[in-house]
Image (cartoon, rainbow, N blue to C red):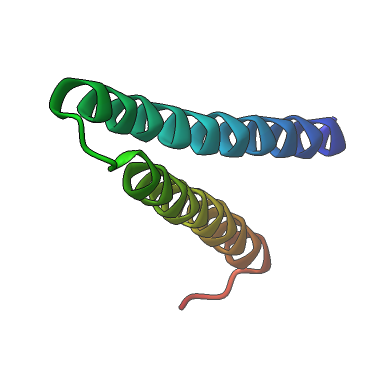
Length: 82
């Protein structure tokens, strides 16, 4: 049963990574597109790059949090304190 729990956690992490990355790029792309049309500028690419960078940062934070939780669980099982 414990193995299934780990599989479900990994599936949840993968889906969170995908949704986070896509939403960051999509939202920043829409903002850049709206600004381009509204003010007749050429800022779409800038906002797209910001969305990609923000997505990478959010994904890094998600994975880091998952790894910290996994390490804390491992320490708890072995009985060691950090």
